[in-house]
Amino acid sequence: VKYYSALLLLSMGLYLLTERSYLKKPAVYAGVAVFLVIIIPHVCWLFSHQLVTAHYALERISADPHWSNHFYFPLKFTGEQLEVFLPALILGFLFLRKSSTKTSLSADNKKFLLFMGLGPFLLTIALSFILGIKLRAGWGQPLLILWPLILISYLRPHLEAKRFYTFFIATLLLLSLLIISYARALIKSPEISSADYPGKLIANELTLAWQQKYHTPLKFVAGQRWIAGNIAFYSKDKPSVYIDCNPKISPWIHENKLSQMGAIFVWNLSDNTNKITYEEVKQRFPQISAQNTVSFAYHRNSKLPPIVLGVAFLRPA
Image (cartoon, rainbow, N blue to C red; front, side, top):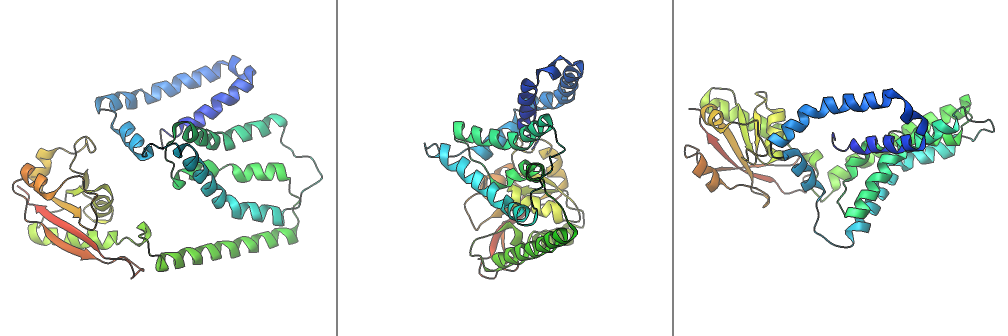
């Protein structure tokens, strides 16, 4: 998210190029100077940690090279954002009558709103079209923030009490319909959803097993980002996560301290996405226990196969 904000800054810069008078103001350059000073510590950290966050970002947008990526990903992302915005669009045009009065926004303000509201979205689409990078629907959430304001500024609604109450009731009905549809989709869907993941149950059971065995708080949990992260989030001990047992991905973890305090290691045996095997961990931590297999059912959706985890404990020194 921090790096993605560069597209908002780029949109601001493009707007300034259309309004040259702003470029003559010292405040603009003072703002740039302050910005550079603020990010210097992060840049230093980035290079001292082998650009780990940049590599992670690149991994998230990478896809198998194919000419269709340049069209498929941007078109798919555009469709997903328009789908999300469709309810607001319908409500806006159905219940807000266009006013004959002129909008209070000046032409400059309208242009500014378009650059800030549509600029990051259009730049995202352009980058995907040029580079063929993969886009995820959830990344569009911050891009839509100003779209309703743009709609209102151009629609120039004439609000009346009756029309407003109709709009309000329709909004509540639409939200209720969306919530019911979403809940039903989670219960009936044959596909796995993170919303059904029993993270709290897994965390509580493994934390309790650890405490009963060693009578000490759980300080570390190692494994895949999703599984280990769920355990760390829900566990009352709030352990640190050693992602994939990889010091480059988790530079805040020191293995000497982990060996001293002990840890829970987890593997997802339901799929083949583990980055490190039990045998490899055993070589690095010879004191680790034998791997046990535990199963957990998904919440709400009984049609989904159970989650099968491999679990091993590294006892505290």
